[in-house]
Image (cartoon, rainbow, N blue to C red):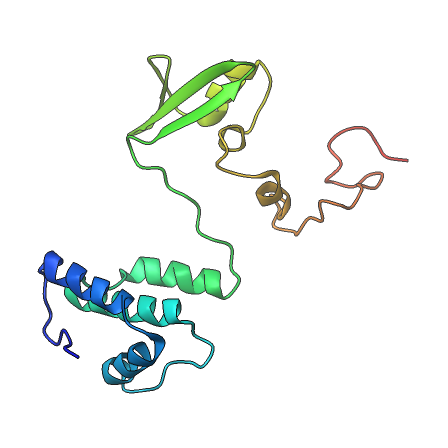
Length: 177
């Protein structure tokens, strides 16, 4: 069995090696794991997972690993932290159908283009489409109601199932009996 021992940026050779690894049986994959990582693979790892880890390692050696910011974000998610806010790149197109009409919004530096006009916020566009106040990111599917209800703007956790009490600062409508 041959191994890729050199760091290589030759994409074709890496692709060939990955194809070879995917064709190996579990015993051969475990042997390759021991050679690559100098330890035994975890007992619960399936053939697919062992192969994926080895292939990731090969690609990491050839092309580099995760940048520190991404590694930190993934570590936080693994620890149960809320994922970082999404940042939309210029050129991203958001599509929403509302009352049978399809609306496309393109992200541009400094705003959003809808119907050949540039707007500073998605909420302004959502309001123009619906004629009612909407949270723009939620209207375009970038945020769920659960995301918004998990934490109140004052920083306190909010239980979305709890009914507001009379005088409750989170009761924005009529007083509750």
